[in-house]
Length: 213
Image (cartoon, rainbow, N blue to C red):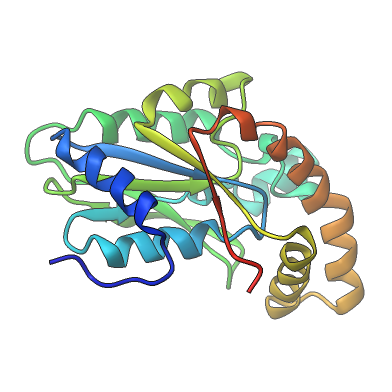
């Protein structure tokens, strides 16, 4: 029996049921701007489909801070070219066509250290649904352009913009930035990225909107 969740409307649960009914392993993408609630939705889906799903976030493919410094990109961490997009694409290809009995390991981004950790997520052979969430799943340039074709379904996640920016400021403060630093990062890094992500909205197959509550 499916775990009860009040956060996901029935039509979206039905979309997942339809994916699983196709058999094999299916990939569901959740895309949206920073602070939209992608990871919250991914966790709710994980709880709604216990023993069936695994979450594999795009954020595990952040470049390490030392590499961002070498490239001169540390001040805009989170932009598309601060990720190993080709590596993420290769992981999704492995997940899409798993070998019999193979455990696929994925990296995980740890906010407490602001670094990715290799091999932190195990996708077991019996996993039927991989939920991958991130900002740039629907970009149409570079390695990012190959991701959409690997997804069986992709939802654009959005929320009231003011609430989203408030959450971002709070998140940055939680992990060590001052109020001024957090607001500056949101204005000059997160929001330019958000505009680029919003331009990909029409490529999603469904739009999931959190209530303003």
